[in-house]
Image (cartoon, rainbow, N blue to C red; front, side, top):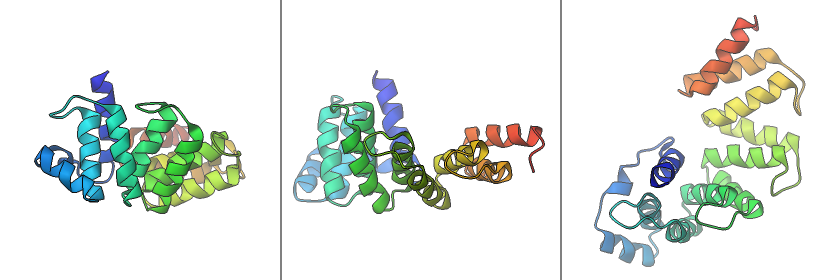
Length: 198
């Protein structure tokens, strides 16, 4: 299980910025700085506990620290805690709480939070279903270079889900995701090209 959690946390936090911060520094000093209100140190500690680097892995403790980081303005902390609530990792599964945290992450310019919030709107999980709002959030995420936002928006255009069907637009969006180095974008771009979409 530890390997899956480490991959989960690494994937979530390492999209778009370096994760070296999660492996450096003295543990005792981090705790002191976090307790003094340094939200970046709370985020660093949360990652350490989530991954079990130099400490016993403790997802509940990680969740507490991600909350401190989030409350201190670290949008990445809000995003990761949102995924933990959505998936029930280290906390009781709660889609309503996940939506709140994704909104806070998105508002804090953690673009991946916009993608996840869009998904919650699209599925009606933890919030009233609203396809238009989902599309708006996917577009914001895609414009911010979040490949998953581009992919989700691409599928909406391909299928005509909440928007007028436009396979050419879907092709463009899958191409953007491919350019952002996400294999799913490349696969779907090739699939539509092979169908003759231009």
